[in-house]
Length: 162
Image (cartoon, rainbow, N blue to C red; front, side, top):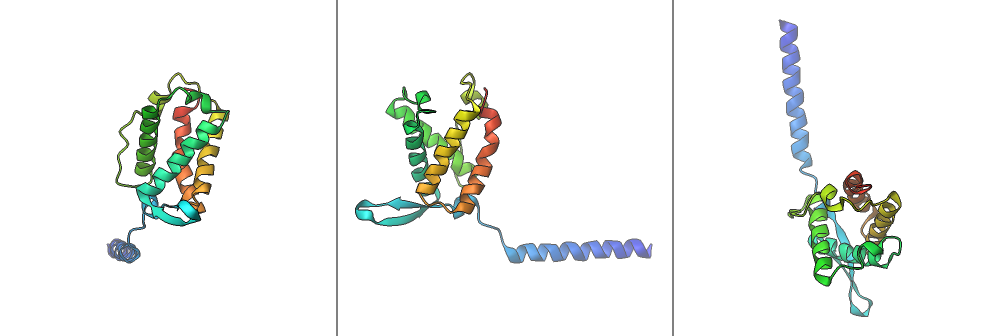
C-alpha cells in the first residue's frame, strides 16, 4: 500500500511540475501570428506586413505565378475577374485558418472542388512551385514557409487524381 501511495504522490508532483513548466513557457505564437512578408512600395521602399496582409500579398503573387505558368494556367484562363477574386479570397481564408488565424474557410472541401479535374502530380508540383516562388518573393522566413507547406501538403490526396 505504501508503494502505491508513493507512486501516486510521485505522479501528482510530476504533473504539478510539468504544469508549472508549461505555464512558465506560455503559449507559443501561431504561424498566423509569426507570418510576415515584404510589401514592395513605389520608389523601391519595402515594409514588413503580417497576418492577413502578408497572406494577401503571397496569394496575389501565387495566383500571378499560376497564371504565368503554361504547365497549369489553362485551368484558370477562362476565369472572369470576379471568379479570380473569389479564388484569392478562398485561398487567403484557407491559409489563414490553417495557420491558426482568426479566419474561417467557408468554401467547398478540396475533394469536391477538384472532382473531375484529374489534376496530375506534375500539376500539383508546379502549383507548389508557384507558391514557393511567391513565398520567396515576399521574403517569408524559411521556417514559416516550411510550416505553411507542411500544413497545406496533406491536401494533395484530396486534390490530385480526383
